[in-house]
Length: 55
Ligand SMILES: [Zn+2]
Image (tube, rainbow, N blue to C red):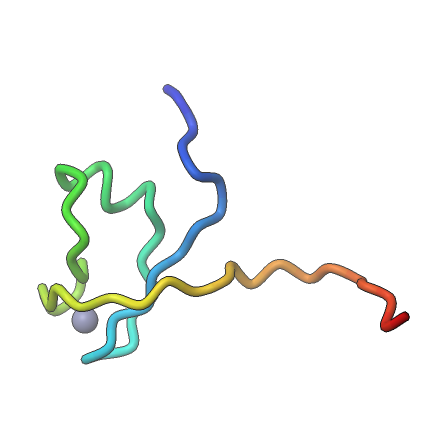
């Protein structure tokens, strides 16, 4: 299985559920909340802990 857009996550603006692109692909590639079915999702950063030095 191919990996696409690794780690990209959407957040549902209605119920706040976090949906990964992988899940969306499994459901036909539609941008749609897997919990409530709402179709307005916001792209968010995955919760990856990364140390970035502040200058
Ligand atoms: Zn939702």
